[in-house]
Image (cartoon, rainbow, N blue to C red):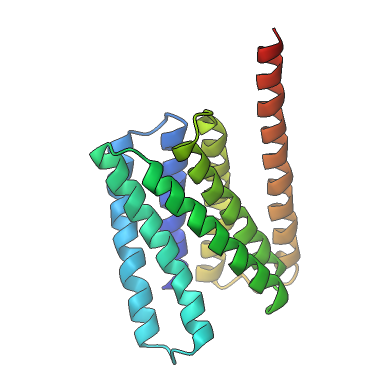
Length: 203
């Protein structure tokens, strides 16, 4: 069920990215966010009930709620046409928690893929905070980041898990390279955005 949740999260994030890029209708995407958000709230309760409920199991399942509440919040905000500051500050809170998950992935589990994934998610949640609370318009940049992350951190890893190939030899290291390349790509896009803005201001 964890993998199914990842897959649906990938779909929601993909649509959210397209919405930010102006390619998808806001309210249509908002409805899908509600569907995924409800699933991501129900699923972890079930997974916790059938687990041994140790602290680390609860820690892992709690992460699903972060996604579920995000999608519910996005869905309601978009459909109701609400101001996004509340969503923005919630996203800031989640981005800080994501850094904690990243740190534990590296230090406790020695899992580089999971650590880099949480780093990317922390960055994305921070961007959601930024576009909902700050006046500077970086919506297109955030949309591109969201679309890329929807595939490399959610959809494709979920498919790897569902098809049983995630443990294949070499795939783990290949995915470290993919995630690292994505980080460099986002830095490049950010540099281009900053450079272009400076050039416009200097004219």
